[in-house]
Image 1: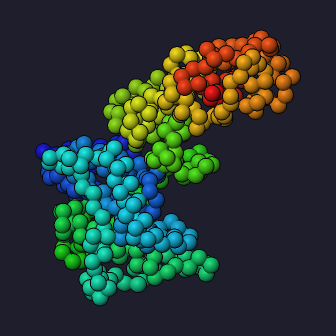
Image 2: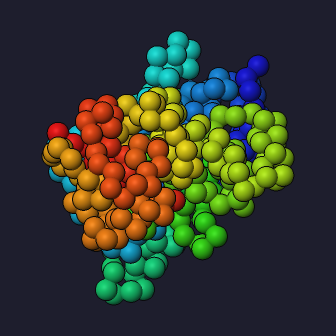
Image 3: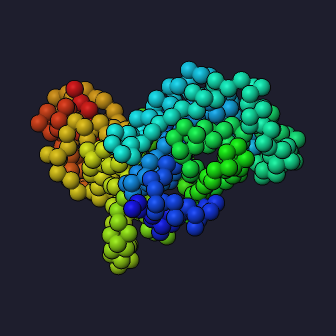
Length: 426
């Protein structure tokens, strides 16, 4: 007996549309289902927008079924036109391969590729699409689709109605390539389910239709909801752009902060979608959150859970502690080590200075750019608005000594409640 993954996914909010819910529910109960999601490797990292489908695959595996992650090494050289108003820049074969390798490492944080019975698979559709000749593709795949059928797609219609946007034959054929992917995975791995975002519904149906027309087999499709914030913006986008899973593109601290800043109205939904916490535990978290929403404990748990999954427990703890230091205020200087300082250096103004005998703190505040003048620095010191390594300094004539420096020569200044400057003195 296998777990009814469809029921679990529905209760956690993953299901927006399902092609044949009753039949698929029965299938989950009686056999190990192989399901796939495709990722176009148009960048060297996945981003928060990919996390719902990734978590969907991870839940399937936890429930005994087999996830297949398809890296679009072939289709990624074209770019999925769904939801796009202009054609993407075509990538080289070499760049696509580099991106696929980077994505593999990120998927391993969520999927177990070594499991004995339902180990996850990572496949690259360039392996079969790159080997298909044009004549064979037109005869074996193209003949099963009418132009009228493809013109019915919303993204095609919208591009045709605007002469400035148009659509190339390359993008027009994308749906056929994705249908061929589903057919290949069905034939090779017995994959009966494709999952994706709402904008993939038409492409998924194309695959279901191609399988039915060529083999008579029944295949299924699921789409996930499109998450929007209260302003109607796509979830996972910020003023600075996408929130990436790569630490080089989005630091673990900023990743953690993204989740901490989740809206109260969204946090329960996000806990269900982006964590593996049981629903009963999430209900308890939300009950406690309702009593003291100002503590943002639900957001803190969300941030801790997903940052641990993506970046590891150590990075999650450092990011959380850095958040507490920068927004909570109190900290013990003894806990600040080189790793924490390097993390903070990327998040607050940072500079390097030379320590000299009798270096007045008021002078240092001017030299590092924290204050515009020595007079301003002295007024701030007299008012008790300066802390050095967590200790308040209110003497305007205070000077800096070598013993004041922490690990590796760092010095953390706080001006007022929220202004920080990190220095390294030599």
